[in-house]
Length: 341
Image (cartoon, rainbow, N blue to C red; front, side, top):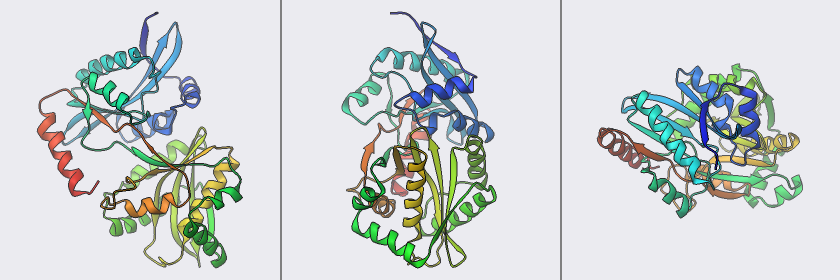
């Protein structure tokens, strides 16, 4: 078998053509996710896997500088032929060299492959351990939106279908926006949502720069639910390849009895269908049988639209320094417990 070589990549078109054609392709390994992280001040690395001068895989790596130490993360990647283990071996060897050069304490990888005993074993063989914290959504709820609108409605939970119709009857309006000023509204409504659900917020800069990165290629849309001139909910939908992702949202503390969020999601699904997208990803949920999880209420909302749960292999860490154990593993394990994750 010919040698597999890893090279730095700097051509957007080549990267995107490969990522969009890959079955594992997702927005977290897109060119624009790299641009977004670069705009936040993170150093990024785009690697290409070549065999016989043909591109066979890509991997976006992001250098994070945190109080617990410097680390490299690979979100929802690498996009490689996982049925050929030599690609993963070469990837691990290469990023160890890169991590050493960047003085990283550890490497965190959350691949876009399913959580199976075989995949757990593959990572274990390379010295990786299950990370104490998640990296982006690891358990997601996905809906096939290729059926007709009538069939999609029919397959929803009865209460969800009723809430959509009620919002329509009450006159809730769903407005689509590409106005960057509306990102500020998302941030403000997120702050209200935080008070109810007690989670750690993203910064306004985080939302704004992500919106700017993906709007450049028409890969993002804001949806606003308005009732009696008040914005009750707003969502951030990313469109990448054949998938639409319900990435962020916020909702008002006012008029909680108005089911605006249900109609908003239904409009986002219909918009995705018009874009010839096959799959709507509601993003992270808790395990369905875990009522203690702080996202159990959100999970009930998302699963009402129909679909199925997908469990990706959870994030795995490759410790590189002894300081990883007290400053990262122990600290994040405690944080996960107290945040009820």
